[in-house]
Amino acid sequence: MSGDPMNFDDREFPPKTAENFGAGLEEVKDRVSDLTAKVRDKAGQVADTLSGSLDQQRNSAADGLARAASTMHQKAGSAPGGPKVVNLTHSLADSMETTASFLRDHDFSQMGKEMMSVCRRYPTQSIVAALAVGFLVGRSRR
Image (cartoon, rainbow, N blue to C red; front, side, top):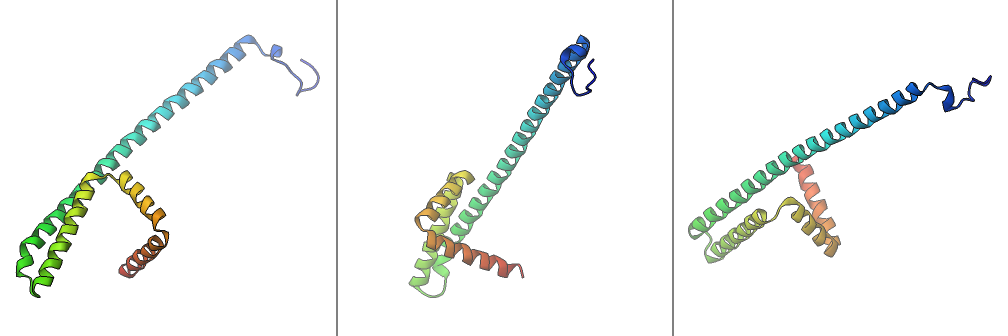
């Protein structure tokens, strides 16, 4: 050993210490690798559970819209207000059926991509719509 405590080389350590350090380093790498795999598996399980739950809610919403549209079609003939109201009711029910079909046929990632496409094509209208929805949500929370 030299007189300077900061000046040393590997020859001053016994060979077993270097081997132990290498083995300890490998053990730490293995543990980190195992932990990473466990976290990745758990994240995948959570994503699958969340995706299944969202799909179930999406299908429930589509079923509810379809039932409401069917009821509107059935009751449209007895609506007061004449043929204009009947036609408007049928038109609204048709729109609800189209929305229900869209919900069944698209998952949330597809809907998000389509929403971004619409926002890029119509930026001003998108901002106005977002402000209107935000205003309505804010008013409903009071």
